[in-house]
Structure formats: C-alpha cells, structure tokens
Amino acid sequence: MALLLATSVCHVLVVAGVIPFAVVWGSRLRDHSQMVTFEAVSLTVTLLMLAAVAVQARYVKIRIPHRVMTVVFSLMFLLFLANTAGNLVSKNELEKLIFTPMTLLLTLFSLRVAVGSAPGRAGLGVAGRGA
Image (cartoon, rainbow, N blue to C red; front, side, top):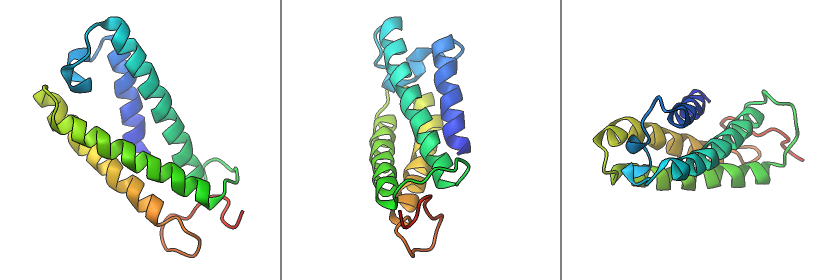
C-alpha cells in the first residue's frame, strides 16, 4: 500500500510542477496539457488500485468475490509489468533508477496476491471469500 501511496504522491507532484514532467513517461510527453491528461489517468488508476488493496487487506469492509479480486490483481500485474518495461527503456536515467525498482516490486506484489488469492490458498486472502 505504501508504494501505491508514494506513486500517488509522485503523480500529484508532477501535476503541481514540483517534479518536472520531463522525468516521467519515458521523457516522451510533448507539452503541459498532454502531461495533465496522462497524469490524471495515472492518478485515477492508482487510486483505484489503492482501493483494491484496501479491500484485499480488509481495511474496507465490502465483500467482493474472490474471482473478481483475482482478475483485478492480475490486471494490476500486467499493468505494472508493462510499466516496468517502459521504465527500463526510458530516455531519462533518473526515471530508470527510481521508478523501475518501484514498479518491479509492485509487479511482484500484484502477482503474489493474484496467484495467492484463490480460496483455501495461503497468503493474504480475499475479502468476500466464498461470495
């Protein structure tokens, strides 16, 4: 959860101009309006992932079928895997250095939850198990 919170803060700092947008998105953003669009989508997706983690960790008391959560965390795994690959080919060395390890960890964590979320499996468990 902490890595996703840190990611959210980074997105907000990019939009606020504290972090230059030249160091994100592989240094491929052309202008401010494109940055705002990309960062708005990224922040929204990150907040949705935070919500999924909060449900998974049972911080939020709602019941969601385990199959739905497995699909959600599988999609998160794929997204973070693609993001890690993108960070590796970034034109910006700082992005490679800072964000590649973050997204790699998020990739591995998402995979662990996705494969460990079936009923009866050891691991974090899923809210709404048996639903």
